[in-house]
Image 1 (cartoon, rainbow, N blue to C red):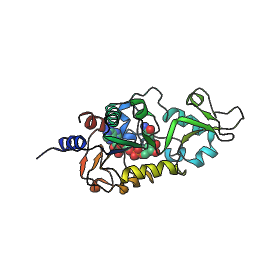
Image 2: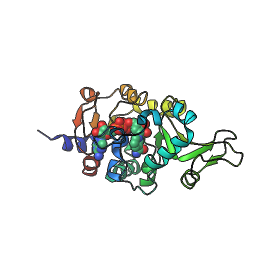
Image 3: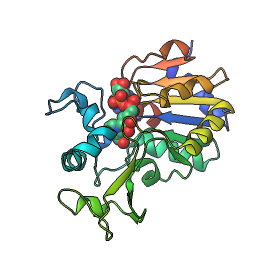
Image 4: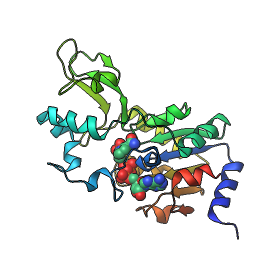
Length: 238
Ligand code: CNA
């Protein structure tokens, strides 16, 4: 009988309508900690629970503390794509992969060369003034202390989806459209704990659902192939 990785290679070889849906685990090999691994962000001790520090309420009520935490823990401008990002970009270039749908905010898929990237939770590279809507690059967050301000004195907010905030509907609908018409759906590096993103898996109608994650997820039972391993190794070996 074929082992799971060979089966995955065969499925990828035979398809030209693959969609990838991933999360923070895709970028851990690039040196960006995830939330829920043993050494992830949620395992450390802070003054407040990290979910609260990344919530809209915290942003509004403790804006300066939000930015201190955000600058220190959520921005990794020197991180480089790993084998997982690179393989996904190659598969798109070969015409096999139609879209990368990511919960990540780190921009590493684009840095690896992926063109069609749907960022469900936004990006640290986009920022805007809450008052006049002027757009700002990441440097305006990195190169300031305290609360970053626009020329008009408005607060510059990262275009990332905080807890309690809703996702951009147009991105969400596009993601649903790609997943519901995919031949192969590869899900990886996500604990599938954060909704509504995790619910996207339910839109897949095919019989080639591949789940690659270091640890068990609540959706393992739905998958046709489950591989509990590093996604960078697994995708790198295809
Ligand atoms: P999560 O809940 O932290 O889960 C990550 C999952 O990935 C865990 O189940 C790990 O076991 C698994 N994992 C870790 N490393 C690997 C690896 N090398 N190979 C395979 N599996 C691995 O993160 P989710 O993405 O599920 O949760 C969604 C949150 C996390 C989103 O809102 C993101 O914005 C947020 N986040 C993003 C980043 C980033 O942009 N790189 C970093 C940290 C958190």
